[in-house]
Image (tube, rainbow, N blue to C red):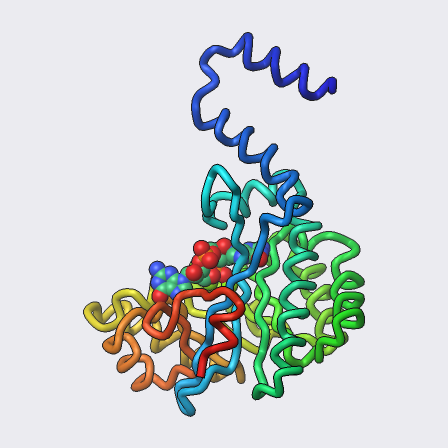
Length: 274
Ligand code: C2E
Ligand code: MG
Ligand code: MG
Ligand code: MG
């Protein structure tokens, strides 16, 4: 109540308050109720093993279907959920929901599938996080070895030592860790070797030009050999064409993800993949 009044008077005395901040406020209010109103859902994008050509993993990607705003992009609402702390309950919902879908996959007798879930900085830093992951694994019967949590360099660099401790606690649960958007954050090779991760995901920024730009191609080749020399699996994000794929194959990339194979799909469509 007091908070609302505060906001009203702020609006009254700050005529310069722009459309952007009003929009922000409306979005924040709407996001508060999104979980309760059942407006959140996950889409799943397949990851393809480049040696076998089969789907080996699914990345769960959050979608918000607001009745008036249509589909709001995660690029718009995840930062907002971070700022407000809403990402903590939303992130737990994502994790549980992804694991529940994975159970449906197992119960259908389908082949081995890894489930990849994005974790935000605020969520990762939350003291209860490791316990939440543990609890969700128990409650959903998710085989920990088939769950991969995607973290970014930038969020780990905030407090490297405690991040590494936390990563080890997660590894002790049996889950795997992937470094997402690799190459776009603060990279430190000294830390990279200390992170208990099993996978690098090359950001699509670098993949985009590999068929035309020799510098991009050289960078991607370097990341792949760096990953391999550390014993990591390397995934290319944003693979949009046969030409991208050809270069990545030649460079020995392990796994690819992108519109060339499939956009993120609603669960029934993902289940229907060959
Ligand atoms: P990300 O984790 O790097 O996810 C990959 C993004 O690239 C997804 O965007 C996906 O739709 C998009 N993408 C996949 N293939 C291609 C391609 O070939 N070309 C292009 N142009 N894009 C491609 P999306 O779903 O909009 O998600 C954006 C970001 O939002 C994600 O980037 C991730 O950082 C964040 N995000 C999504 N879902 C969650 C979630 O459940 N929790 C958290 N914390 N963050 C999430
Ligand atoms: Mg990701
Ligand atoms: Mg990424
Ligand atoms: Mg990203």
